[in-house]
Length: 227
Image 1 (cartoon, rainbow, N blue to C red):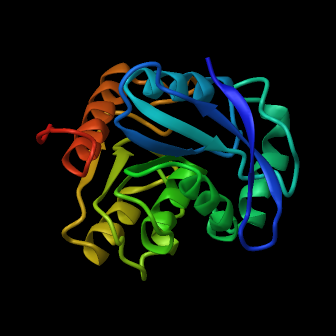
Image 2 (image 1 turned 45 degrees about the vertical axis):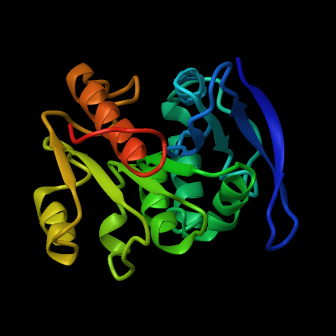
């Protein structure tokens, strides 16, 4: 359904790839999806297609293109974990690729929403406070959010976390809540990556999806209510 397009950083002119899925019916808005350490995977491309069917023109920027180009052929590959995790660390868990995120935001007509998973969850949190042109952000299980609590989101933002996530212990969750007591933090009966194939938990994936759509609806993409 989607296609590969090229975007350009306004900071240094760097050109990078993104997966783009376009609605076939009425457009509700634009959506940027920030990927996990595995990159632009088949699962995320399918997810983008699904959001396009819901009316969102969706971009999944390849945020590691400065380090290694190409979309992922598989959703996970244990043999590539050291390299991919190294990419995440080299970008300071998204802090150094916000120019690419901004380019994706700027490529979409308003209203523009953003979501991200794992590495992309931390990147989404950073985008909520450092990028412009966003209407709302949903961050899923971003393990390094705890390291970036000084900046407050400039737009409505929600977090989705798993109660059994070994990468985000309860102490980290409490640190986030103490730093931002008004921030909606939704906890699910699941572990890490509960939306992705390698950690999928159907009830948690469904409920978090509904809450994310409701967030978008309350902030410009039609009408919606709390879930």
